[in-house]
Every structure is written in C-alpha cells, then in structure tokens.
Length: 193
Ligand code: 5GP
Picture 1 (cartoon, rainbow, N blue to C red):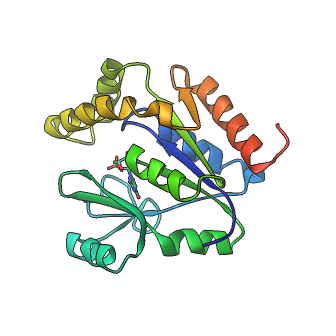
Picture 2 (cartoon, protein in one colour):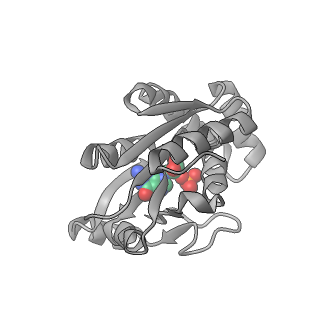
C-alpha cells in the first residue's frame, strides 16, 4: 500500500472524537476522507450503510478475516466486530486523499505500528470517567448494560494514552477542535487558518 497520510483519532466511546473527526472532514484544505469501517454490530438510529459503516454479518466479517482483507480488526465489544478493510484505504489513497479514522485504541495503535511515519495517532481524553458516563446516558442510544460495558473498557483505554503521538483533552469542545485542527494541518503540511 502506498499513497497519502493516515490520521487516527482514537478514544473511549463518548469522548467526543466523532464530533472532532466530523469537524475536520469539513475543512477542505486538509484533504481528508473518512475510512468507513466494516462492523457486525446492528445499525443505530440514522446510520447509513456505506456512510457510517459497512454493516455486515458476523459470518461475512469472519470470512474477511480469513481472507486477510483487513488492515486491522478488533472484537471491540463481545460479538461486535469492527475492522478497516484494506480496499477502503486503497480506494481513498487512489483518490489522492489523506485518510482519517475513528477507531478504537487497539486498532489505532496497530495501524501506527504498521505505518509509523505516515500516521498521526491522536488520543482524545474525556474530562473524567464520570463525565463519560453522563455523555453516554445523554446519547441514550444504548441500554444500561451496554453503557456499563463501554465505561469499563474506557478505564483500560485511558491507560494507553501515552502510546499515542499526541493527546487532546476534550474538556471544552471549541478548544479541542482548534487543537485537533492545528495538529492535523501541521502533519499534512497545510498553512494554519
Ligand atoms: P460504535 O459502536 O460506537 O460506533 O463504535 C464503538 C467503537 O469501535 C468506537 O471506539 C469506534 O471508534 C470503534 N471502531 C469503529 N470502527 C473501527 C474499526 O474499523 N476498527 C477498530 N479497531 N475499531 C473501530
């Protein structure tokens, strides 16, 4: 695989990384395109196949694993598989884009290890685990059980922050967006706004 740069935003669920990634995608000068992951989890709310995720069955997912189709994949939550298809990144590189990922911590670090020089790996830190709980409840897209599962995982993920190139603290969204912009603009070689 050749092509452009890779930008990873990894964080515990509810940290606000999706908001940050969506903001960056709107900044045309950064020339970013979103890597749509494959997942075996069910579709939520207004999510669209091919836009938010490629929603596939567990069997299809396992077939892709066998065929070595993934750049990385994880069973992020039990029976919920998520992965980055090599074809997705190749497609976006062929369009001349820098690729931006919204993936979990383990997957993010795996990509960084595969492409150390062309990858910027950013960890988004939530103010606290309590605040994370409040945000996930507000979002109210999942059951209490699922929320608790996400919280338990978040504590483990927070410990991996030092392995990333940069850490952004998302205490105040506007500040976090500015910081994220600066980091990415520097990395892809765009003059600051
Ligand atoms: P959600 O179910 O909330 O959409 O995502 C759950 C977690 O899986 C999030 O942390 C999300 O970033 C992560 N995730 C999404 N796509 C991928 C992927 O392709 N690979 C990995 N390793 N994690 C992913």
